[in-house]
Image (cartoon, rainbow, N blue to C red):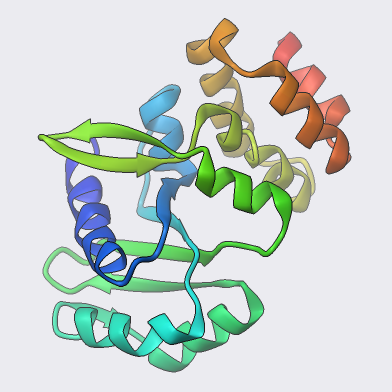
Length: 185
């Protein structure tokens, strides 16, 4: 299951760990781990990267990854995203700088750890993967892929989902109707 992508995520993650950066795997890789597996072409990481981390991260990755230092700094300043590409495998890692807002901070605090060949991989919690509802809305509400991921996590996790947490964040982000729809399907 996605072993190549997970190995690359762990490799980049080791560099983030060395810098003291809190991070997790999110997106389709995480929803495949906690929901229903599907093919993906990259790995999404969420990291609390700050300006002081950019130069050392660049230095740690530049020999084995394509990384644009200016794009990385711009992403950190805007709390946006950038990518790195492992040169040996051409596996792309999209790194999103964690937003400075309650949901994003809580997502990093609530990360769970899954075992990958004896290594601990930090992963978004099932409830935080439902942040895909926000991406679904941002994409105009037409992404079958995002909706399938949402439904897959709900089907697999079922009653284990923290309904109070979901309701609180869905309400605060204006997607409560979508959450009800996803839970009801």
